Length: 292
Ligand code: GUN
Image (cartoon, rainbow, N blue to C red; front, side):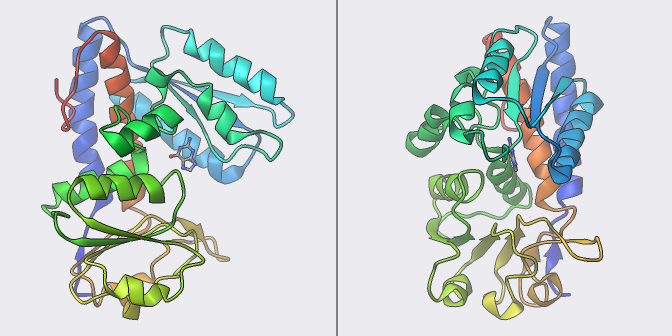
């Protein structure tokens, strides 16, 4: 392997340490930050993600509540539940784990979250802010990617960023964040023709397609930075990303591993967004590093 490994676990730890100090400062000012996580049904992967989010909160002093609701819940009941959390002064951030079971409308549920508690940043208004100006709650995964690049001293300004994936959770907000920092952005997806050629033109390649080992070494321009957002479970139970790591790491200048790359950054950014939500209640702010 010739690429430098971008160690998301270590970088996330750095953010968590700062957020821990910030949480203590907020607590001293009489605000104990609180995050409510709502999970509907019994999808095992979602259960793991939710557990990790709650644990990360507790580890830095954010009070977390996990609400596991049955998959039989109706749309109206779920929205009423979210509205109760909207009115709860101890809850500063609300996260509804996606995807929801098929009979529920993800979009309608997200829109029922109070704008100033939307720590995922998925509400129409916060997504709109992200496009036009700046969201108080940048979506955690793409924001984590940006913070990771910044931490490693990798500028995207003037570079060509190619993003594979057009989801509302990663691809679209990632494009906006890259654009804001001066990148020229190409968004590719499953129907893109000549995908490998597009990827070969990337200075920064972000893979968020959800297909194991999809991006091969010869799709990577020599010296490119490769960010792997995918988390896929193989038949033998091991985790791997969307990028064929063994091949791509021979060509890239820097690359994120899976696990231990983007994943821990997503959770760290959720903590940051929750702190920002709590601080805003008091008219306080936290800077990028999470220190008041
Ligand atoms: N499912 C996969 N990623 C996410 C995320 O960042 N937030 C929520 N709410 N659900 C997800």
